[in-house]
Length: 459
Image (cartoon, rainbow, N blue to C red; front, side, top):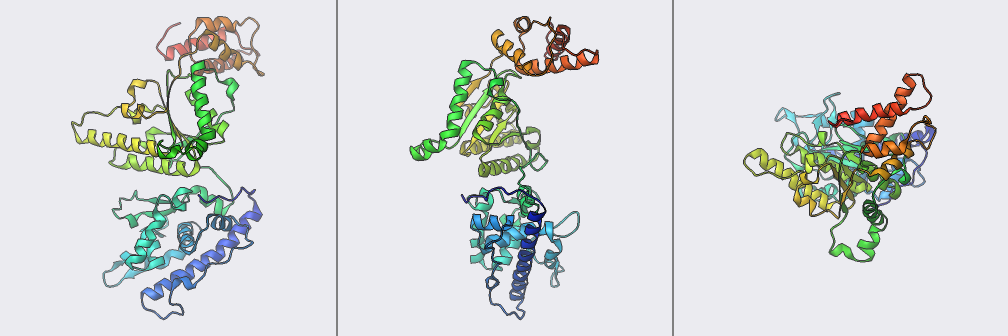
């Protein structure tokens, strides 16, 4: 995979450099499009081939666009497609030429592709548009263009360009060409942003201010977690240097199961922090769709981006999506099972780490369970571990009344680490509400009652 240029601090000078470079690139793109139209309609032209219009030289250019093109080894075709994806954002009227009508049929030219933008009514390019600019309507060129759409091309591998088929297009060439938000910001403002949660990207990057010392686990769980750490650090050695890529499936798949609040999410987050990798929690409520095929598309977008960026994918409450397949008594059952099969395929082929978390292991489909490299049970903490958790919350500036016996609380109340954190938060609020500067035993006891009530238990 081509290397991405190192980060440069954004600012007015970077924006100025980006704008200057893109002005020249837009002008070149417009000359290429004008030449394509002249050649296609048999008009007089000084050029017999669009490639006679050479793209601007980028030597010595420090703009983000120039760095991306150079570092990724983009040629003429890639630069045209990249500009085609960028122009609707920076110079939309440059594509108005594609809105011309075919007078013979009183409609747009099918060979130009594209769709109308819903907001400003402009032209939004599709793969058909890119193929027409680069190769006209010749079949040989059209087939050559397909290579730019392959999963192993830098556009897909690095998550630069997304092909959106959500409009219901049945043609491979009918998908709209969209520049990822990450690269749009980079090529314009110079900011290197990470993808964030939205309806188009149902995943959220999770971080923590805690460290491994704040995590309280059993020895067995620690051993399993350390295995994952070793894989994250040495997977290249295992797969490439030791040659196991021939016989061992790529990636690492883990199942975290156990009661809520026992450290599953924190463990996943700390694994990413130690390895220097981003951890993205998948929002299953936005991934799963009642419309046939939409769930697979939503998941494909996440997996495709995760693969190019080496993310750790964390599916919380995973049984909602990775649950047991049902007997196919209806068409809905068949489609549900189809989604599970698709998930199994994508998870097994993913070269990074996938973590599924659930409260009940029995709810997870057995076909998935057999393919986990680790299946780790996170039990409720015992008395000693609960005391560690209680003490951990009061290591800093938080004030605790002298009469509070944390050891007694740990012994009397079997609650998880997440519940203890909620109790401490409530205790701090209650203490301040009553004008006290330290948390009392009663503050914590009332917090425990609230937590047990949520779980349907009594004190």
